[in-house]
Length: 522
Image 1 (cartoon, one colour):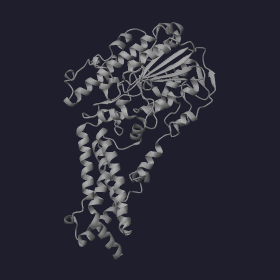
Image 2 (cartoon, rainbow, N blue to C red; image 1 turned 30 degrees about the horizontal axis):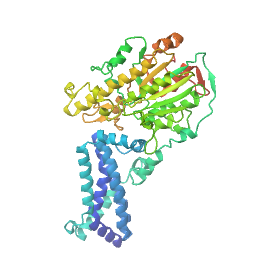
Image 3 (cartoon, rainbow, N blue to C red; image 1 turned 30 degrees about the vertical axis):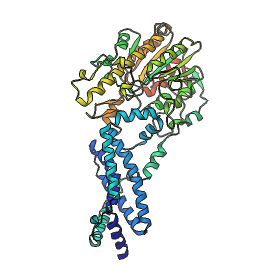
């Protein structure tokens, strides 16, 4: 026992500073997150002390390999700190699977825009300073900071006692505190990363049955990006962000739905819900039947996109796009596309619309109001400026002006798409994948949902939703249009789009009852 205590004291004397740095690196980011959102973070500190105590005992008893183990532990801890502290600075979140979807589902242009929007110079300096300070402290070997053996013996015993007292309560599941163990934390996250490629591998032979004798020939889904209903003048926002769609809304051609939400405030989850029968339960979403299993049997399907065709690994948009009969990504046509604006899609859409000789489903995926906002519209669309936003704090005005400019430009693009089809027997939907938190829950934060804040989820899930009904479609399907008109105030989630589309087209997938789902449900 005495020999063991001597080793503990010797290891503590040489490495107390390094162990303290490791504890700070592991516990500080998540503690800051919890403190920011008002959650108790005492467990984080206690778990870190307990796990460091276990490491302390092990490392002190294995001789020279103890330092090797400690250096390895620090390498993982500083890597974790770099990512976790970065997540805290970006949007006051802990590292999660959504961080990995962002990294592996984005290309270099999107990642560059992400850092430009969320990681200004001030945050870069804070992050860099924290990293340098932790590394400097870890490498500090000053003899003046080394306590005597007597003090080291006392301190090591006190530390072990405290670590034992911090033993996680048996009431807490091991996954709750064990997930903080590095590198187990990353193993857990990696296991959650879903293989998007399995969607194509798991195509299903899904029998269809005729549910009605109405079979519209053409349906168009226009899916926007990051459009918050609170900045839509059609719904009462005081700035004229929707002048062109507002004109249509004053007629009977544009149906404006008042109570629509998205399945989730993340693109990858939202798309999975929209284009599959997955209902968000514990089953693998990629094993679910898809939109394409149903409608590729009766319609020519095409995907026209201004989003990127790939990420570092893959992304949900490209995964579903590649299940269509025809795919057109602007990023693959640099010879035709000279900039990144959504209006580049209009000639392509017009070309497809003029050659719709067979039943078709067309999905148009816009960049919409994706960060960075100022890159979503041409300079000539600089309609709003920061001086128009005096009711906002000074740090908010520029971003609000840029977001509203992007929204006004998006209004023009969507209205132009509707105009292409105005004389055709076709039904068009427009809705975004999700909204944004535009300083709604924190005066310092503007961007995608703050994952651990329920109010932010609530804000980001509220979206605009329109259906454009050209006169030829209204004349050909009057009863169906009447049902849609009666549904404009009905609560609806776009995760039920598949059921709505089956109701509209008159085809029902075997085993997929539409009763109680979809907009046409009475």
